[in-house]
Length: 571
Image (cartoon, rainbow, N blue to C red; front, side, top):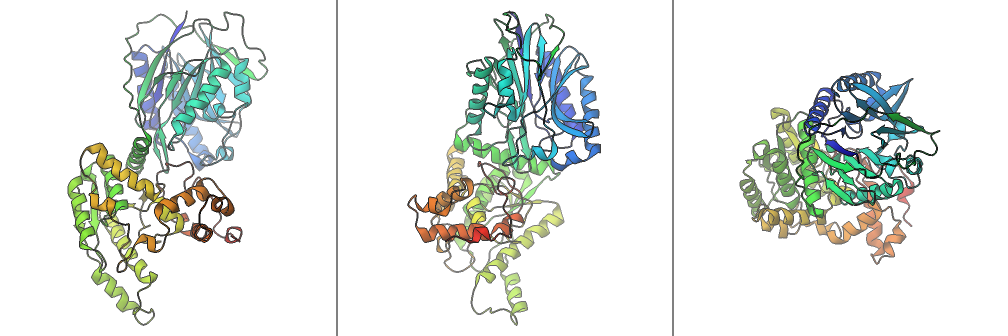
């Protein structure tokens, strides 16, 4: 019975970096060959990076893609390789998977199911493929799919695989992370494997790309949908697995039924060759908080490094949001590459100032202190003939926030440090943040993390290290912006456990106000929260990108017009 050794090169690609991406693919081909693999696959669009967005509209980008692909073809002696790339034929662009064997192009499959929801815009760029592709080796048939092909129940590819005679399904993906997404992938793949009565190999991209994080987690499953092997998550790997097809369907007379929409290609049979003994990969099991935290770290690391920065700077207020942001940054970049700045105002308490210093000491990062009292007073003096500076208002609160943002950006300009903003999803949702103030920066690490989850993650940080990294007083202190005497967040907002439940229903589940009120929430509170969300779209549109960790994040996921009369009507 034929036994195939299949390798899955789970690589971290950078959009448009053809030399680096090609180098990783060639290196993984060699590693797979050294392991005695017969076939090696690479993730969706891994050659050019995913998602390339409007780079796909540039002909030079497409030509460079195909040039790099041809160089990879030259490295496929003694192995079969399946590479994800953009294809360009007769003025049309396709999301493609090409099969190479012995330095020869054997077949190219064009993705049929093109996602066009959430973060996906594939119909903007790609032409839909029209036929399935199967290649045969040693009378074993391999069915090619790309990401979304397996997610559409009853779709073209799921119907095609039934009669394809496939023994092994290969899927190359760029499936972005959100909490719980791995379980969904296993469910979708299991359904597809059972439909095709075939082994299933799922190869997923890894790495951060702007707001998106790809968490890898590639796997192999049997025809029943049971996972046989898994690759690590959040890091690159080459997963090798031996698959024994005990009764190839071609041998049983069960060849493909309808080949009108199926391209079937016969490849050279595999030859006997030495195979090293495979070691089962050590794969960590991630709980909910584990995987969210790892996604934040990887997303931050790749955004900073892929954009050419070496160091980051964070305004440390002594609050929980900036504390969690700093911990993530240190784990992503190392303490030597993280700088903290505390900027006390007339309303900053000694407790929060002390906690900022203690956090910096725990993280072993540099901390600078830049008091803003004199600058703030200079603002008041300069505007005294125009503004009512006798009565403290929200304008005066925002002046302080903008002074701090200005100082951080000045340090960024002076030293080339990237400013990490510290706002969480709850604050950003309702506009409890200052445009050009605490929103000023290059990357928003916890932009998609609700406030209640910020507390959970902060406790998780201390628990997982078996010591106090984030001071307990930071976690237990009632949240405050400290922009006026005695200020507390709950003076302006509902309690965060309540607020986050309303926001989840409205933002992530698109529930109507009456549906949310029917769950037992106060009517006026719901209307006030929704009004704040709707009125602050203009702020969110001007904020920096941040790591997506929920099913619906602000930005690519949720796109609403700023000028919008419909959402003002709440009665």
